[in-house]
Image 1 (cartoon, rainbow, N blue to C red):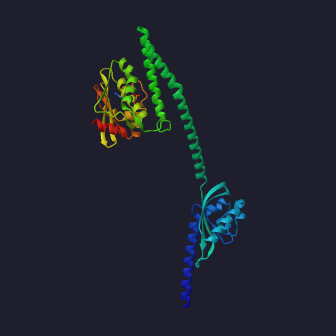
Image 2: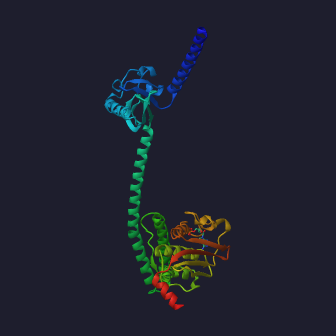
Length: 394
Ligand code: ADP
């Protein structure tokens, strides 16, 4: 009977021992740094990674040592203090630690938890530390790169502001003088001044496109919603594009399909630039016929309306395959690419961006060799005073 019990005990013990060894093997190869200490901050064991980074031949060599015996003895006092705090309060602790290891100074994300016996008494501490040195370095590099990019962006913004003043202003001056002197002279001189006018306009258009490209998504052109006169915008676009249309013998027509409130609430700058881009494209891609702006305002709710502005031309038209891509930045149609028509490929992209900012859309219908119609649909508000006068007029 006794012999039988002895045999059972031996079997259980062997099994238990095998289990313990299996667990020890698992712990010793676990990634990260694993170590455990007793209540007196004396190491009772660790895994292979921890032993390696402490320059110990095997995990067993750590047993009986304290933080003061290790490579990181400089930090021993603060490490011990944290460990004692965890063991006294029983509250797990998570922190970043910097320590001198075999591979140099490393940063760790450490988690420390109290070890309890079966009675619930705290008998030591288990620590798991993950090396985050490379991640910290990357974070630092990213932070520095972001700061540099922000600085560069600021320099770009200032450069654009200066360009706006230093280039656009004299260009407008040249254009104004050429237009004025043209009316005072005749013959060849007048033709030459027309060339100056056309070239200055082209340069100004290039410049405006590049400038606006840089301004989109920056703080240079804030989206301020204000009372605006659509008719004034249309008049200004006509004034700016009249000589280009005349030079190509094109008719520039404006038609109002509905009554247009004298004031609407939207963003003047964006509508003006979008319309200007569409009209100057229409003139550029049309050799005979007309360019027509058609406007309508449809009331939707008490103070809401939809403003539609279509720009129709009798020009070369746009192939179906190009009708989506031409709205991408730096993308141009086939003929433009072949150098027949000049441009940057930015105009329609700017139009699309501005429409998105205003909550509107730009759409296109076209027929090859017959012409194209670009339509801006912009939700607008109607100012209170304007609504009353509109009601009275009806
Ligand atoms: P750009 O005119 O500077 O090339 P845009 O973005 O304004 O750039 O236009 C992109 C392309 O769309 C043009 O190159 C042209 O191929 C086509 N396009 C734009 N408007 C018209 C139009 N009214 N008629 C024919 N093609 C047009």
